[in-house]
Image 1 (spheres, rainbow, N blue to C red):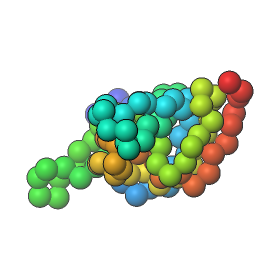
Image 2: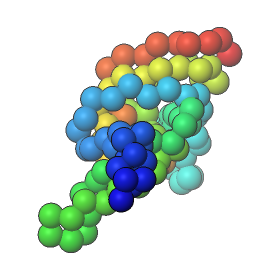
Image 3: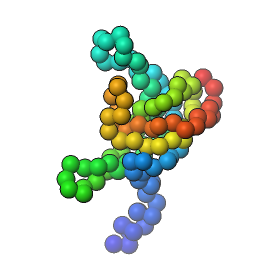
Length: 116
């Protein structure tokens, strides 16, 4: 039991839907999967390291925990192929016209950490 307590003390935090977070990684543009010319490409941030995300589960009051290594970037055009840091509101579920990955960040601020 002591080992369990020690292990949980060093575990990474788990973020919930709606939390304001700062995530770091590399942004890439993904072409739409559909042939619809009106569909815009999506931006995805591939994270430097995976994060834990809690989202609403299918059961009554149940929450689902998952490890996320990429998030869709909403409401921003990031610096492509550069190491960046995004601060914004974490959102789980399909939140845009183009569904790239199940978790997104509604960007409030971008900071470029290293050049392209």
